[in-house]
View 1 (cartoon, rainbow, N blue to C red):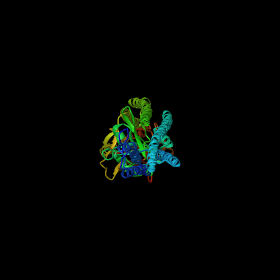
View 2: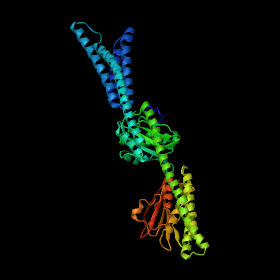
View 3: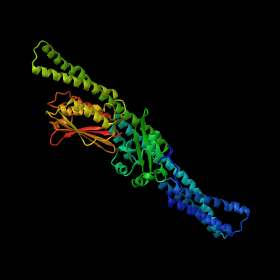
View 4: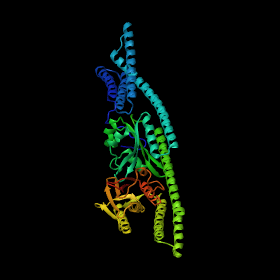
Length: 537
């Protein structure tokens, strides 16, 4: 589907302008036939052949050759018509001039040797002149079109750069990039994809509404050996990949029919790379052959780097904001929550030493000790999540993590019934060694904030082709609707909870870092269901 950055040569077994090329070739063959008939029926001296036969024969062959080239050329339909028009006009003018000369000679009763051949030879000369004029005209128009194309692409780039400089959200930035290309002629649509290693293909991350029907009709293998398409090749090489003509490029065969139905005639895949990090690939499609000239390719390559830089900046900003929130949460734990609990413990410890403490005070003292233990565990997990934030998620066996967490939490809460719905599938997800903290917090949260003496918690795992969904369902008092939208925010806790509000915040931070999602919903007939969606590894 792709060639080198310079594009591919058109295949000679595909006729792009059969009518125009055939008409021109027919003109040349007709004049060549007249020359041949004259040569066969007339006895010409050597000088007559050199002066009168060879030049028109060469011109006729030239017209035939141009006709064959025109039939398979990548010229636009308008330019192909201009070549035929100028050639035919030149032939008509040359032939008409010869006719006028023959008539003039007849008026003066002067004989002209083989008038029909003379008219044909003059027409051949006119066609030769017409071809030269056509070449100049087409070249001038292509230069003018190139200038307009450069102006158009620069305006599109200006709009994209403006969007990149003001972007505060990567999804919005990518959507704006695709929309700008779709609004600019001759582009049909654009989309941004990323490699999906699990599925072995390139999936669309951002696309316009116009592009979505096309994307739903095709599959792009990630392995370039399966299909040498421009998208996979751009990801593999880190360089833009151009298809000048989708109808003739043999590597575009898997997508040719779909592309043609959407008016696509050429395409470019631009990798979004900054400082060695890849942020996907921008695909742009055009409705004319050879729409991406050399200059346009260079500009789009630089634009891809700029878009990648903007995405890197937004990712870095988001990471800094998360770190700031996490450090703030850790500071709250160490300097506020733990300090307050320790103050209460010290006060009751002194009363216990003096023999003044009663059973209620002792229970409070023990509760505070348990709370400090929980806070230190949360602080450890929060500190670990900050440390690993910059690391890439790796392959983690989900079933082994869940089994270890279930055994640990069940041992800590013997009064709770913690079960698994069915068997745990042996699947791996994209995570790290902090994944256990996600499920420890969810199970602890379900038991501690249940509100009853015998909590029941059920864990379920459903593995899909691309993701794995883990549910933690309890039969507790549930989460009020007003809190569901902000339950994962820093410091949020229920009205009857004595917790720090950091457990679910930590869960959300880790799952987001893994590229997953966590949501809450009501359980039936009562309680809460927390769904954690993770990417399969």
